[in-house]
Length: 236
Image 1 (cartoon, rainbow, N blue to C red):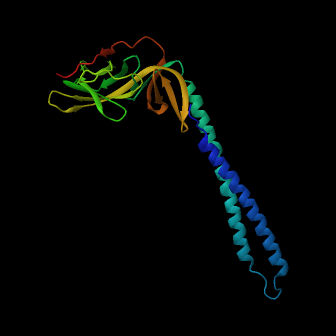
Image 2 (image 1 turned 45 degrees about the vertical axis):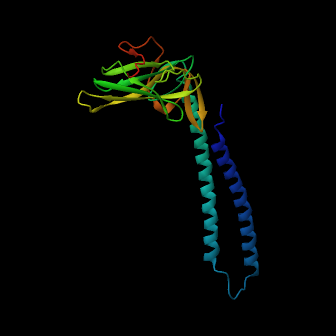
Image 3 (image 1 turned 60 degrees about the vertical axis):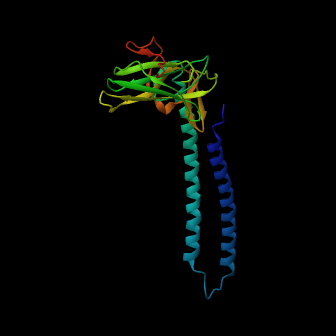
């Protein structure tokens, strides 16, 4: 697990260093001011406006540091809250707008959603470099959500090795060739939560999904009625 508290720790360290520096400078300022007042020319006294302005500036810096401390505390609380909120998802079924999955045991699975009945659905699987390794036709064309499982085979018939992360893309059109609304989804049961760069992620099956991409949450249950399963159909 990647450490996710460096931002808060760094901010706290910087704030502590700034406070120490301010305290030293403030003490030095008061010492110099006292010396000036003791040794000033009685016939030409020091302009009180100058050191009043300096004192005001020092106070302003002190207030800013206190504000920084408050923001650091709020950030720490927010990070902890993100982890705590994510833990509420454990054991529940989620649906997220997410298109990446890891090839495991020769399989990677997604769902794609069609906003309207389509005449044609093109599916593409891309590797981690963005290269298309498989293309085919989606056999499910009706409005709604359809499951799709890729068997790890390339369009040319080769077999990709387990462990790679692959992305699914979907493009749907109507009978006139106009683009139809579609999106790739990931569904599954949450079995853990982690923080990466202070952002909560959910462990779902073989992948990790940002909490912010979740669009549906429900108690774990049997597959929803009406969801169909699509299988790869390579273009001729």
